[in-house]
Image (cartoon, rainbow over all chains, first blue to last red; front, side, top):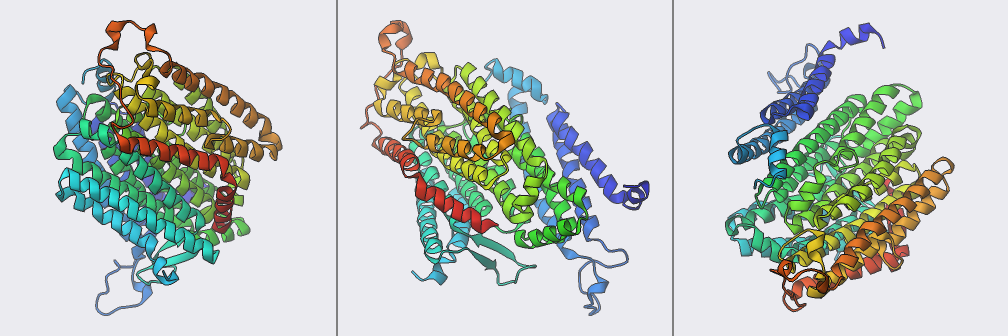
Amino acid sequence: MSVGNLSANYQEAIAMIMFAIGFSNLLLQKNLIKKIIGFNIMDSSVYLFLALKGYIAGHHAAIVTDGVQSVDAYINPIPSGLVLTGIVVSVSVTALMLSLTIRLYSRYHTLDLDRITTEVKKGGF
Amino acid sequence: MTHDFVQNFPLFCIILTLFSGPCCMILRGRWARYVNLGVISAVGVMSLFVLLDVCARGGSYVYMMGHFPAPWGNEIRVGPLEAFMALFFCIIMLLSMIGGAPQRLRKIEASKENLYYVMVNLLLSSLLALIYTNDLFTAYVFVEINTISACGMIMICQNGHTLEAATRYMIMSLLGSGLLLLGICFLYGLTGHLLMSNIKEAVAQLVAAGTYHAPLMVAVGLMCVGLAIKSALFPFHSWLPDAYGYSTVSSAAILSSLVSKGYIFLLIKIFYRVIGFDIICNSKIINIFFVFGIAGMMFGSISAARETNIRRMIAFSSVAQIGYIYMGFGLGTGMGVLASIYHILSHAATKSLLFVSAAGLSESSADSRELADLTGAGYRNASAGMAFTVGALSMVGFPLFSGFISKILFAQAAVNQSGKMLPTLIALALSTILNVIYFMRAVIVIYTPLRSIPAERREGYRRIRMSTYPQITVVFGCFVLLNLVLGLMSQPIVELCARGLGMFG
């Protein structure tokens, strides 16, 4: 494990740092909206990582243009497909989280999850 | 029926449940309920045919989706263990849905009832897909569908408790699935495949060549931790008591006995079909499972013993049972995993029985869930009282019932492991004592004569006869029968699981 490896793969390293930022935000933030933002950063970092795995320098997107059918002309299309699927999943999960947040806010008038928990324990239905 | 036709059934099951979900959205509550029960029964019958077919032919098969061959297409893999799990999950789900129906109809707004069945159908679909799929990314997508539908089931009767529990559940689940996704991406980057069998070949080559050891272990670790978080292994269980304790009873029964088990089954598939069990055993990951499994057993039981709310008590007991299952993985032998699989079955059959019968006991005691208010509930609702007693005895590990067999299997698996034998046996003994303390306390309370509490506290108490809800009495009978079958006729089932597990490798 050398510094050379790290600088050559700096994009992957950035993806991992973003994952750590998103993960710790989702875990540690008290504010629900910030948690959701953290979740989105975390998922985006995974998509960045996947897209990097499929990218081959100098090759084009996997859409046949000008009748060129050689494999050497295009990038690996599978990770791009996975990213699209993943985006669909994270959009639906984000929508669900936001709707939960709206429900909780209209009930307790705060976005702080710890304060909501205290209110719930007090029996404030 | 011909073999070629039966081969299609696993795909039919997944598609049928997936599409009947949205259909329930446009139906009225009652019709949606019939569609839901019909779909679960149909899937159960189809799974039975698949199981008989697979057993008769004595082998597993891989079903190609869309006729694209291996490295490109998506695949379904069917063996005896998968078919048996699908059948078992359908039985538990059907019984939980029928058993929870009266309470569900009272608690859920009539206009929202059909939405509940949308969630249940999608949940069954994702469970079946997790059981059958041979593709890691498909597994990830269905893990997310499973999470979303489980969240919907928690918050269907909306009060502060369920909303907060659903939010915490979502946050924990998202952390878990983020780690799982990252692990899958690492593995894809290392091997270039997403189908389980292809990844296993590539991983075997990597290990033989001795290259990329660290990234491989990171990927395995990420997937294991991700699924452990999602299945509520101690210390990631903080959302569990509220989610199981305050949601409607069908949700609690299905969540505790099926949803977390779906993730654990996926983990077993990752062990055997993706990485290879030898590589897992040689890594240190199983030791971590072992330690946290035992910690979960102790902590879950102690918390349950301190709890005064009966539903939360049963929920904390689930934390302990999940600990048992991970301890079985931690032993690092085929026997250990087999014991864990048997515990998945016995816990599913017992925990759903306990939740449904606890709801019956509460109903006869002015809808209170406090243990003190349940005094004498076993006399007021005789069938629920007996069912609760059977469930409690099974959880404790009383001979005749299913819990006894799984504990024996754990002990047998541990005996061959010199280093881990003593901690396992001590943990089993201690947790059994703790189980006795809190479950027998509950049984004693529900059979304490009512004379001992003052008359003014008896307000709202009512007698529920077996004929009030005949379908629930039948459900209790089925659950007790299932427990007895798992407890008395364990040998063929253990052999079936062992054969199915052998075909995983």
